Each structure stands twice: as C-alpha cells, then as structure tokens.
Amino acid sequence: MAERPMPTAVRRHRATKVVATIGPASGTENLIEALFLAGVDVFRLNFSHGSHDDHRARFDAIRRVEARHKRPIAIMMDLQGPKLRLGTFAGNRVTLEQGQAFRLDLNPAEGSSERCCLPHPEILAAVDTGDDLLIDDGKVRLRVTTRHFDSLETVVVTPGPVSNRKGVNVPGVVLAISVLTEKDRRDLEFGLGLGVDIVAISFVQRASDVEEARALIAGHALLLSKLEKPSALTELEAIVGLSDMIMVARGDLGVECPPEEVPVLQRRIIRECRRVGKPVIVATQMLESMIKAPAPTRAEVSDVANAVYSGADAVMLSAETAAGDWPVQAVEMMDRITRRVQDDPGFIAEIRASQTSPDQTESDAITAAARHTAETVATAAIVSFTTSGTTTLRASRERPRVPIIGVTTDHRVSRRLAAAWGVHPVVATTFGDLSDLSKTASSIAREHGFGAAGDRLVITAGAPFGQIGTTNTLRIVHV
Image (cartoon, rainbow, N blue to C red; front, side, top):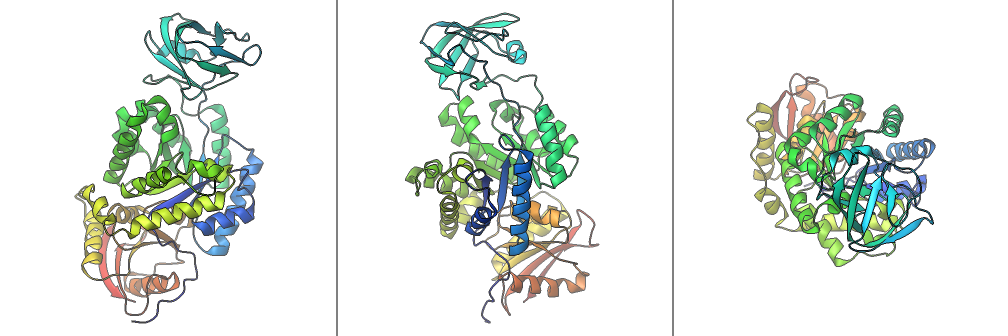
C-alpha cells in the first residue's frame, strides 16, 4: 500500500470534540491559534462577560486562524440569560445563623441580618411554603415559612455569610420568566450579525423557552439549549427535539440537584441526544484544578473519560481556558484523555451497548449500512456528501469505528459540523455529479491525510444533489 500523504489541513486523531471558552487568559490571536493547534474544535464566547468590541476582535481572530489552517472552526456565543440576585446589604455583607428568621422582600433599601431585597416578583409569585431558596450557589439555604404578595418569610437551613448581589436559585420551581433578557436580545442581534455558528441559551425551563429562542434565531445559527434547570428534565424529549444541540451544564444543574443525581442526569441526557442524533456537550468543572495547576487530578481525568465513554460529542473547558494559568496545557490534556479513551479496544463496544436502532427511513438505512460496510471491509473513512449537514449528523449518530469526512459546499454547514462526533468537516467548491463522487472523495481523503492509494472509502450521498433529505446512495470506492 502506498505511503499515506501528509495532510495539508489540520485533522484530529480522535472522535470526541473539544470546546474551549475564550477569555482574558486566551483572547489574543496567538493564544487562540495555540489553543486551536492544541485541539480546540469549537470556541465559546461567553456573553456574560466582555464588550461587543472584545467579542468582535476574538471572532475575527478565530476566522483568521481558520483561514490559515484550512479547517472549519465553530464559534459559539453563549447568552447570559436571566440572573436572579439579591439586593445589597449595609456594610456589604451579613452572616446568617442556622434557624434564624430572614425576610426577602421587594423593598430596595439596603439589607441587614433580618431582611434583604429580592427584586424578582416572579420568584415571590411562584414559590410556596416549604420551598427552598439557594443563595450563592447553594452555600446558604433558606426555607420559605410564610408567603405574602410582596415578601417571603424564611428560616435559615444552611447558615453562612451572604454579600451583595449574590445569586439566587429556586430548585423545583418553574418561574414565569423569559429565557431571553433585553441584554440577551441585543447580544443575539450582534452575534448573528457577526455570523456565529451556534447560539447557546441559558435558563431553559420548558420546551416553550426553546421555541421562543428559535423564532428569534430564525435559522441563522444552530440553537444549543443548556440544561441547567431540573425543571427542564421533565420536558427533556421535547427540548432535545426542538434544539439543534444540547449542553449538560453541570455547574448550575449541581446547585439545584443533589450532587449524586448529576452523573445520572448526565447519562440520561446523553442517551436521549444520541437516540435522536443531536450533538451533546458535557461542560463545567471538567479540569477545574488546571485553572491554577499544570496538571489535573486523577478524579478529573476519570470524569472526562466517563463522558467520552458515554458517547458525548464534545467536552468543554470553561474557566480553565478563559481565566486559567494553563489554557493551552488544559486543551492538550483534554486531547490526550479523549485520544487515550478512543484507543481503548473496548471503547466502541461500550458506546454501542447504549446505541439505539436507526429510524425507519431511507436516509437512516443508508447511513447505518455505511457504518456496517465500513466495519465489514477494511475502510479508511466514510465520506458523507451533505447539503444541510443532516446526512453527516446521521453518520455521526452511528458512531462508526472509522472517521467521517463531512463534505459540503457551504462554509456555514461545515462549521456547524465541527462539534459532531467523529466528523472532519471539509468545504468543497463543487460536488460535481454522481459520476464524480469517487474522484472527489479520493482527492479529499488524500489531501486531508485519511487515505492513500489503494485504500477503501465508503461514500454516502443524495441524488439529486442540493435537495435536503435525499440520502439514497452508498458506494465503495478505492483511493
């Protein structure tokens, strides 16, 4: 067999993708490029922080890196969402004692050890006697004893210090609040104008929240729903069905759920996303210790590995790359962990154990057959020609042992495939016609380092080209 050529574009030697957050520790073009070369497939812009000018500069830098290295890079904008916070205190902070009474009300006056402003009437309207309110990520817990139209009488269950404008969580309660604030709407208009590929929405409580956001995005980007509220799990199937992607936002989810529930919910969410073929990202505190340390804990490595073994499409770094001391090393570590898991002979078998049957459609039958074919005869890659990305996502859902080359003529589609498991996105100037597929697939496989002369490729495509949902062709070709 001929020697495999060196690729002219960057390729990954793993199926699970890496998402990294850009922030003060990683916002320069040099650092963005270093993170990309270390293994980042999707860059996250966190709109809870930074100005529009900051985000524009980072967006432009990512696109320049993409052009230099000839590999599509997805850019995610993560909207802040509603933030529920206390008011302020005289002296900036108080310490609450276990068992003491404490009132939350709408009075904007500075608080004391007896009361504080809670400037969110929607919380007062939704909670009931016996409900808990969590302050500062659950460090302090209050239980409602009496509910009035303009205040809540509570008792301190978990004591501790409370300072100005600390966050408030209300577990188990659905609030009558829009998923998008006025700030989010301004940010969304700005981000869509830039051309972001993915919009992540926070504070999803119900399926109608996703519908609201989808109407505003109007197909200009993929919609990612962050599952961080337990109430969303009661409508999980509907939320996944309405979303293009899902994020398991374990930080906030772990505030409102008992910690032992989070791994169970993570697996449940991943299973549902895999069932319907929607990319799913596992996020928050994955390599938390690498914010300050050059190496992770063994527990963190196992945590990342478990997400990979579960079949998650991507794993995400937050503060590790946005504000940490070792951003590039954190990405390199994530890359090493995911590659090592993938090299485990039992990796694919474990993923297959939780795989569901394909839908009873012609397109799903073709993509399932492509995976079986690629594993029956020694194959270098599956080459998926796609117009909208749907065909390639179907191939990704099958979790084949071989790489998937997702070929499209649309730059936007190629970037949107960057977060999908096992997919190497490629932009082609044209597909040609069915008679040209073998030549085009072979050329791309050689150029990107997936095949050498004599290697087999499995091709899926639809005819007529350019028509969404017509995957009806499977071929075996030789490079």
